[in-house]
Amino acid sequence: MNLVFSVRARALQTCNIQIPQRLTSFKNSRLNFCLLITSKFSTFPIATMDKKDDILAWASKDGEFRRKPSVFRNSVARGTEYEPDKGRYHLFISWACPWAHRTAIVRELKGLQDVISMSAVDWLLGPMGWKFSSPEETPGANEDPFYNFEFIRQYYFKVNPDYEGRFTVPVLWDTKTESIVNNESSEIIRMFNEEFDDFIDEKYRGITYYPENLRVEIDELNEWVYDTVNNGVYKSGFATTQTAYETHCIKLFKSLDRLEEILGKSSGPFLFGDTLTEADIRLYTTIIRFDPVYVQHFKCNLGTIRADYPNLHTWVRHLYWDYPAFKNTTNFEHIKKHYTKSHKQINPFSITPIGPAGNILPK
Image (cartoon, rainbow, N blue to C red):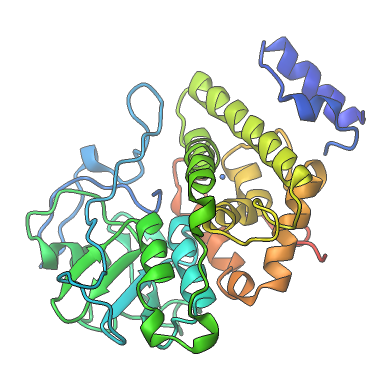
């Protein structure tokens, strides 16, 4: 066991913190948040935010971060108000947001680029939420393509002037009815997976990332990975008490240990053997951000993927380097700038670390 890890282990034991088992034995041991805002505002003019609704006040009074559920939960499906069609729907994302990232990956994996158009907001999450910017102002971002809106929140108020929920991405927008179909990433990726096969190239038809024979296992894994890993980094990073932070950070690393073991026993390169599924996609958007952001910014620092989790490290590099849909939708500049320059309560001077050396390492 190296010196750095020995000191870390002794410090944790002194604080009576249980160390994840795999980390104590690994000899070479070396963060649907896209926006929380819950106040009512008119769209024109855009109002200033009351202090009690400060977008930076994410944690509850007990120090715990509790994510609120998405509100728009309609589906694109045959025989419904929202029929599948080419060119009808538009996806709003942030390259920085892991929840929105899922939808961009599946859109590309399913060959939907010419079927569902897409825009990306600026990486900055300011007091008024996600904003639109020109590519000249922020490379990788887009201006609003329909109404010349300044902020994504204006879409929410266009649909419902009395809206009192969160202003999040992704947003699946219906250009025909001028309404938000859905803003829950886990549901949008299944629509993309299943509902648009009539409009895509033949080579993508019938490909599914939610195969029927694995659905029970996928759902079971998604449940605990969402709670302790995808959302676990936020529960750790947005905690405002030591107890809340330690509780969720330890749970996070226990789940990383569990995932490491699953991949070690897998018969193929993915969580479910040789089959790439939505479980891999949903996990990827957290793991790809882990070393560049979550370790330092969210204090998830009991280990790193590259040094402490060899199976996860091989898995994430395989997806990034061998599947263009993953690499093409991973924008490290947006990711790192978003977290470090938007979360003022964590990083008040908005300094973005220059490391790690290589946001992702070669295979």
